[in-house]
Figure 1 (cartoon, rainbow, N blue to C red):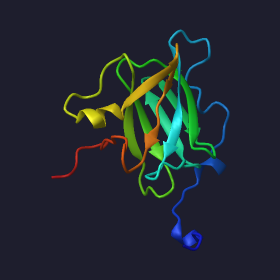
Figure 2: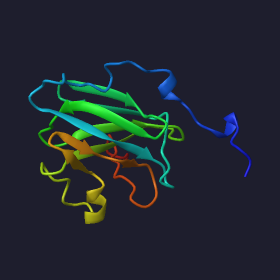
Figure 3: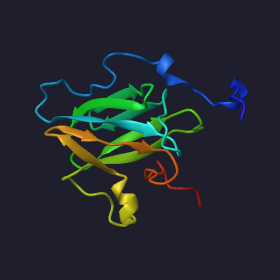
Figure 4: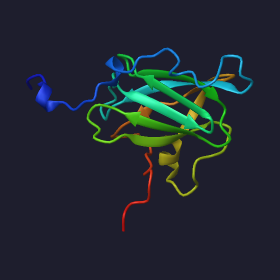
Length: 153
């Protein structure tokens, strides 16, 4: 297969347009409820998705983080009451997708989801105040994504 040409790819390419130091830090390091949320964005083949952009938005908090060449990201935010809304912008997506991050040991994901699918919404602890959450955009183990608004009738 020949390499992709620019007309075969879909932007935008966020990592070049939006780097700023404060983006991933929604709370200061000494915040009493500070946690680290980190992971990778992966495509359907399990390959890293570089140049994606992730946003978290909790009451009174906002963070934005590009992914690195290995698809990794890292936020510092506050432990949520229920979940952390996570918005993903990436090449190949014509619209962003959003999901929820439920830190393990906290509020569980919605009971109405298939147990295997529910597991894709749980961030695994990697330390006392650190959680890993990988986003799989498609394929086996695809992360559950939600519609921001009810679909039209």
